[in-house]
Image 1 (cartoon, rainbow, N blue to C red):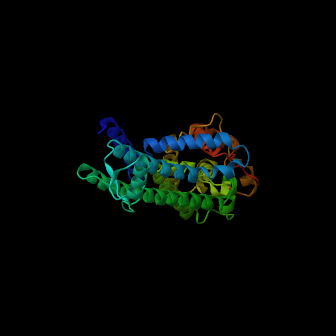
Image 2 (image 1 turned 180 degrees about the vertical axis):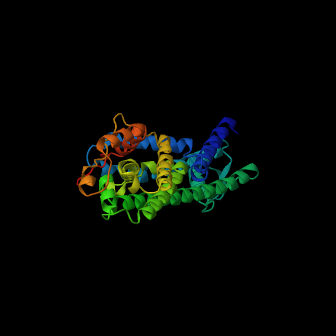
Image 3 (image 1 turned 90 degrees about the horizontal axis):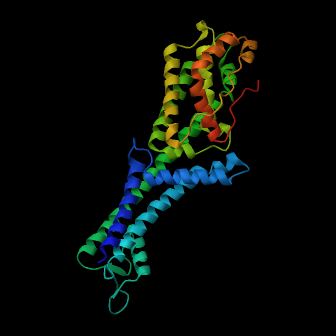
Length: 335
């Protein structure tokens, strides 16, 4: 038996299973090393190749990455077991002929495909002894990988649903922070704002945990700003900035509510580094209080509001970096 060939095959099998387990089950571990390289590589290629209808085509990046990842896991497992069985020419026996014959490379590929898919052995059987045990582990590894793939797919789909739901809820109230505030103002105050912010904070907190566990979610993009969480989070954060620093103090929501919501956004921003998303070079445009002032909303002076934004420079640059990485423009008011 060729020991080096057996060890090489074993390493490939372990690499496939460890990466799948790491990605699908290790909540705090993020993506496995292989999955991380696939994610960054496919994303880089798609950004380089796509020149027109950028947002539409980039919305396919997440499904493409997920599909490639699954195929790589299966390919590594398949290749690893084929190499292991190839270490000994007599490891598998072809039983369709009157006299059993040693298997060929094609026979071994066929046998491993049947075995890891848990469909049985076909016309090829392992030799007695250790190879029978190896064939049993081939089936077990196939079952394990299938379980990991299903878990991975369902978890990511759940995260994508959360992203779209959050985007719809925020942009449903306005395509910019100014529109958001105008739409919740009833002429005297902001009725129902507490419930809205708590609901959005809850969804954003859930999304944060999902993106920590599955960084591939950063590569799932909506085709329009209303379907993508990146512009929506920027709108939410600028809305919180207006409510905290732009309104006159008697009209501001409870400080604890604003503090909690802003802390949730900050936690979300901490997940961006895992997807290589960093602050933009420039600061995004500040919210314009003019339309709010004209609508009778009691806001502070532009000078006071501008001074309040000085401490938020890094935070807002990071949000702009997120929006631009998703190939969108910073959400601005049209009122």
